Image (cartoon, rainbow, N blue to C red; front, side):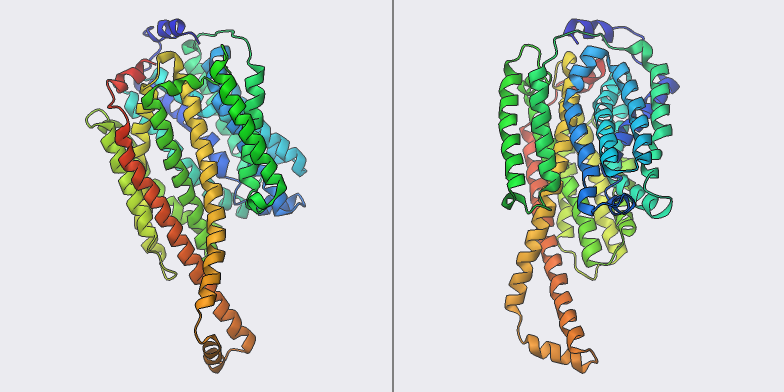
Length: 516
């Protein structure tokens, strides 16, 4: 979209919405965003059910997750180009309908290849929903309501990754895994119909620039190879596998070629020039570090609870659910505070709370109760909106009006990719750290034969005594490894809390966003 066209349309009084119409528009856009992000995690805990139903191994079932993530990661950064070529509202509506149709096909898929194919289509449709909903939200909200609207939209981004495993586990254990897809159908139809009815007259201008086929091809190769590598690295023992090494090489080379091409192309498929804005570039880095750490904590908690504490997937989800309690409350509060407090102060405070909550987890023990885990989770929910809502304000306020869709796409792409990196790194580190700690503990055991003898004296057979001792060592190894990783994640967040002050102080960023 050309800058002149965008300025002209944004100046029209009918672009912004008010009252009940604005509330309805925010709900539709936020629900669409929630749905797209939810499907990144909703089938994660249902993979064993899917694998069993389709007669494949759990490792093969992982492709149900990978295929969606790859497709979504490819289309998210394309959002700016899609909006400019076809119109933001049209892209949003078509993506909503395509998401519903592909969700239906996923539920009916009789074989894994077909399910993976439909998940790719679902990911291609889900990718644009996030940045398009954000762009349209900034377009329809008047200046005095833009922060509140962004806070409500951001609330769905915070809640969706947590809600996914809870809903997915409950659905798979009760009514069957296909319903994890079917529940999207009425939601997507609602978003498409309501979105078109309310936003058709607020469509953005269309610019028919040449298609950057080379940039598109490089993006697909770079993102596809990277996502497949991250999703399969742990199962393949990472770089000891030629498959992972080849994927890493392909992704790295394609990424460098992509950067060079896009920065020199007259009409790039992804506008990387938005990184010239210091506020946007630093916001992107803060987003990567924080969301990667956030996703690492979401993954690490269930790993520890299910392997060391005897929790089921459903009860692990209940522990995570408390992250969303205060998140719902604090999102609109953070939006109001932006107009009164330096956003960097809110971000630093939010990250400090997150870091403190994570570091408290570094002191967890194997006898922790459910109730004792709640406070750190509530603190996470308190801190997340204080960081994420101001971050979106600064990042979107730092770019030119014509760059809003491109910037939104890139921020969401960075968030998605950082989440994938955080997940991959934490699972690999947790596995290797647990194994190394176990070896160290075994080497330090004193009088193991005496301990086994005492257990036999208590009535255990020799085999039971050895097994009991082995389980004690394993439990301690898991706990130590988990605590050490929580400490590292906490340090990363604390460092980011200090680094946000490197961002330029926003100058009228709130008003600028609203005018986009």
